[in-house]
Length: 303
Image 1 (spheres, helix red, strand yellow):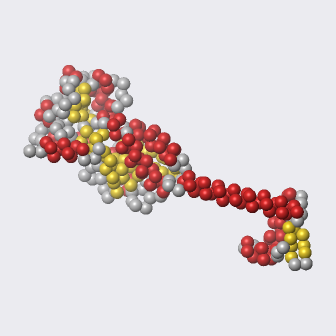
Image 2: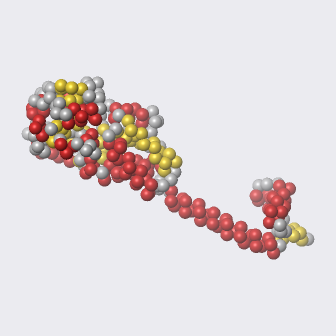
Image 3: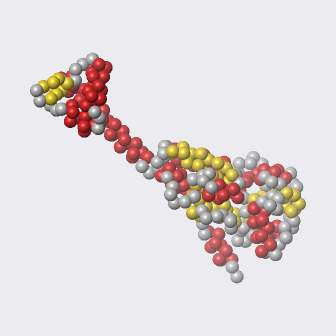
């Protein structure tokens, strides 16, 4: 037995509002839930049955919330925007989606492929939550974690660069007719700066703005190029080409996972962690080296 007035106060509603709710439920179920007594109200037999089922429903809802919390407690939910470099993005995206679907199904992933020189700028402006990018001197104040290192290759027909897989010296590279991006492209500046540090002036005979354009010229025998394995991976004609690392130790660049700041959502943290795992797991496919491996080679080769 009890009082509707006290029950209404505990629920934070008025007594008339609670009475209307009870009458509505009784009308829907076509039963009487309460009977009046001298000391208030008491449940009828039908009311006891409704109470028993209601308790089971509420317990089921509590279990549902517990299960959902367990499912998402490590990753959260919502959309996460990820920036990936061109060429590498198309190779890694399926693995990232697969990993997140298995471990954090509540995360909706939006992958954006951009030129490497755009990535940190877009990350800092809030266009994405995390990114994979190639480190440059102007990478900006982003929080980053180096996960791999990528070697540059001289790519050309065997009759031009030979079939050997041993590194090609900078003096050998200087003798080749090269097909590279235009001078304003960061990757061209990167290659020429390292060549100049070795006292080498490169013989650039053609400029092409895309990896596909450079590769087409190389396959046609118009010259050699300097690029990374990601540019040619998946190309059906790559079997016709030779690939040799540039320099000894080889010319390379570092690959990092970057986030905008420390105040990430659980979803973004889970995505950044998945991105890191995928980058490491797929390093053999992309011919990436572990961080520091090439530094060891440089120390051993130093005079």
